[in-house]
Amino acid sequence: MIQSVDRALRVLAVLQGARRRSLGEIAAGCGLAPSTVHGLVRTLLAHGMVVQERDSGLYRLGPATLRLGNVYLDNLELRARAQPWVEDLARRTGCAVRVAVALQRDAIVVGHEPRPDGSRQMTEVGIVVPAHACAVGKALLAYGACEPADRPHRMTGETVTEVRELDVQLAAVRRTGLATEIEEAVLGECGLAAPVAAADGVVAGAIGLVVPAGEWPLPPGAPDALRHTARAVSRELGAASWPPLVEGRDEAAS
Amino acid sequence: MIQSVDRALRVLAVLQGARRRSLGEIAAGCGLAPSTVHGLVRTLLAHGMVVQERDSGLYRLGPATLRLGNVYLDNLELRARAQPWVEDLARRTGCAVRVAVALQRDAIVVGHEPRPDGSRQMTEVGIVVPAHACAVGKALLAYGACEPADRPHRMTGETVTEVRELDVQLAAVRRTGLATEIEEAVLGECGLAAPVAAADGVVAGAIGLVVPAGEWPLPPGAPDALRHTARAVSRELGAASWPPLVEGRDEAAS
DNA sequence: GAAGCCCGTTCGGCTATGCCGAAGACCTGT
DNA sequence: ACAGGTCTTCGGCATAGCCGAACGGGCTTC
Image (cartoon, rainbow over the protein chains, first blue to last red):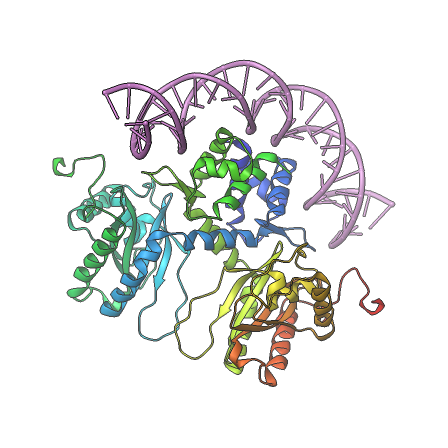
């Protein structure tokens, strides 16, 4: 691990926490001397990863970050392969559909098909949700694709913050291939998700349905349609089996 | 400029060029020894900026890039302030509308309102176009917000690659406050754009209309509506005047 | 079946690199 | 005019990181 690169990335992480930060704030957030951070920031500046406001001198993230994120999406095989299946799933179920991958202890949405009711909806691509609090995140956690949180953070009154209770849920996910979420991330929103496996057998992402709490539980056909979609996408990615095999531990023994 | 950080960012830039690259390819692309690149990549790996495919060992960009890009968009005042005006402009003109900012020698789209004809359109947020070849880019170039290319790259048969001719066009942009693009970036697509100024008087971005070549030239009301929108957004951002003043050089003298 | 070739990875010594404290420039408000 | 707060610059010390070379695995080739 190269120290200065690690620090530069930490600077970017700190910059994600607020619209704009002063050099001193960044330095404090990283636990470094301001002059040290200055060098890092200047390098990031030269590449457009951060920008400096001309009048105030404060720093913000820069447009190069957007380019990187966009290229990431364009090169993501999961997203491209899942696209037609996800559209079909949304049409069949009438639900919004999310495709997500693991990012450290969170799930990040890489694909979003709005619910097909013609209403104008914000795209959710790029949003980050703690894995323990959303259906796609639980699907990732259950198969070891996501790092488990040592102390799950509470987001709503329904969020599961007990590690033991979460483990029980994850075991159920491994049995059924489906993960649920009932107003655990945002109030009024429920979800059902299934893991997607890739060629190497590792879980590469998850596909989930998202509905308002009023429409929960989902109609009987929805879980099957979701499973069908997850299996189809997994097969397209070259996975040998679905549901994915649990790596490392023997599930039957528990 | 910190060497190792600069190199790490260069690694990311190389990774933008292809879906996946081997360590050796990255090293060659950066002109560095593979072992050097390995250290950089491992650090990026730890932060999720790159991922390594489990079976092949090849490297791709990682999901942390998407999070960064998304936070950038969320924190972008230009985007938030322009949003309602841009929607209105699209409704009035019937055109797709782009909001773009400068990224080195390119323009990058940070906001996109699809043309209001109900058809399904891909969002263009995140796409990068050489500044000299698109309307928003020329609007940025004309006011010094974008770095001029020393050797403008040809994209279509209509692309202006002569620096002198481009300068003439940019002078016209400074006179009229409007920049045009006629199939210079992609065939069959024309555009009209206006700069947006921020509080410090510097041009912070540009707003542009995009239409199929068959609908060019635009109806008479469109340029005025665009100018009106650009002025309104500039005022919201705190700019004192519009069109923006040209910094550095005295336009009347030329 | 073994040799060759690619891959990513590890190790260690040299030195260039980047870290940090202190001082400088600039602005704002008192 | 001063004091507090920015960001920025500078230089010496030491360490952090660079690179060449060697290692280990998976693959094709002969």
